[in-house]
Structures are given as C-alpha cells and as structure tokens.
Length: 105
Image 1: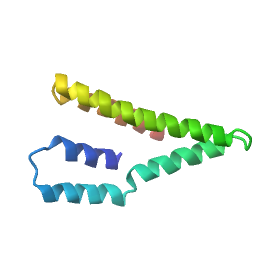
Image 2: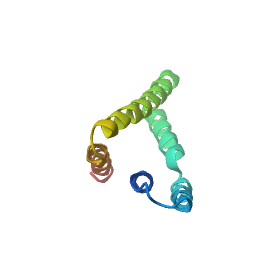
Image 3: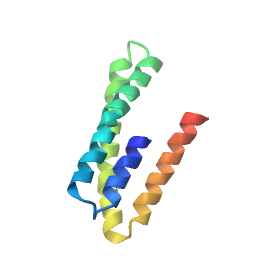
Image 4: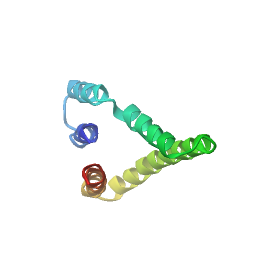
C-alpha cells in the first residue's frame, strides 16, 4: 500500500522537478514494488493448490494479473482523458481500502 501511495504521489504531482521522480521511484523499488506483489500472489496460489493443478493455476493467476494491469492502464487513461483526476483517484482509493480490509480483517 505504501508503494501504491508513492506511485500515486509521483503521478499526481506533475509539476515536480525531475529529481523527485527518481527519489520516489527509489523508495518504491526498495519496498519491492511489483515483484513483491507477484511473488506473494504465486506463493498463495502454490499454497492453496495441489501438485496436479498448481501449474495451471499459476498460469491463470499470471494471465489475470497481466490482463488486469493492461486494462487498468487503458481504462485509467480514458478516464483521465474524459474527466478530471478525481475518477481514477477514487478508483485507486477504493482498491486501497479494499486491500486494507482484506489484510486487517
């Protein structure tokens, strides 16, 4: 969640100097960024599946993560083109609160 907030700050403040983008990305990647998300997702799928269906389930999980990332970028771009920053920001807030709910409850 910290990594998402750093990336959000990095993308929302467009008038920042260039060196600040490097600092926020270094902070994000020190936390593991997308690699931590992928490895924890695959570890979970590996834990809940049996040996016979593990490969298929990991392939399905990987394809769903990649498709979700692709569609998120496409839809966020269209939302920003036809509205203000509030629509994608509201969507990101909903996702962050849903993740917090899943983690804490």
